[in-house]
Image (cartoon, rainbow, N blue to C red; front, top):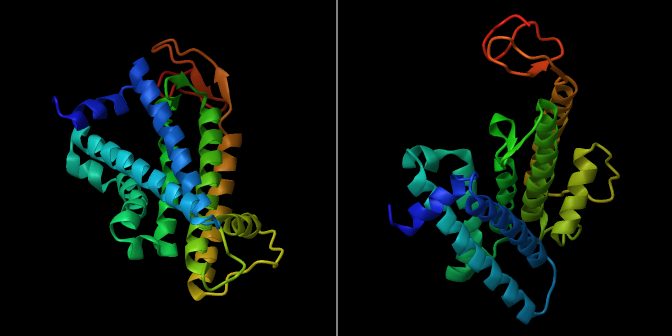
Length: 257
C-alpha cells in the first residue's frame, strides 16, 4: 500500500480529513481549468500562446491520468471501477490532450478534441450520495436542485462540444466553442432563433438527441424538486427527522409518524 497511486487513491475518497477535502477541491478547480483550456484552444491565438495552452492541457491530462489510475488502485474491484460510466468518461476526456502531443494528427481532429467536454461529468460526482455535498448535509430539495443545475450544465456543455466537433471546419457559423454553446442554449431551450443552424446530418442528429434529453430530463427533475418538501417530524423509533410532507411512515424504519 506504499504505491503512490494507493496513497493518492485514499485521499480521493477521504473527505473526512482536511487533506482529502483540499485534494478534492483542488482537483475540481483544475478540472475547470482543463475545460477552459479546451475552450480557449477553439479560438484563434498566435502560435506561442497556442503552444502554451497545449502544454498546460497535456500537463493536466497527465495529472488526471494519475488520478484515474489512483481510483482504480484504491477501488475494491478494479474491473468494476474501470467499467463505470464516470471512469470511462474520465479516460476518454483526457485522451485527446495526451494524443495531441503524442500523435498530433489525431489529437487535433475537432470531433476527437470535443470528447474533452466529457470532463463536465465530473461535476455530477461531487459527493451528493447520502444527502451530502462533500461533508455538508443537504436537504432532499437541495440535493434535487443541485442535481438539476448539474444536469443543465452537463447537457448544454456536452451538446456544445459535440456540435462544435461535428460542425467546425464545414460550417462557418461554428468557428469556436462560444458559437456552439450559444447554439446549444438557443436550441435546447426551444427558443430557436434560426440564425445559427447545423448543416451536417450528424449535427442535426446530435441536436435532436440533445433536445429530447433536455425536454424530458430537466422537467422531470423540476417536478422532483417541487415534490421534495420536508417536515420536521421526529420518528419515535429511530430518531430520523427527515420526512416528506405526505409521509405517513418513517422511510428509514417503517414506524408510523
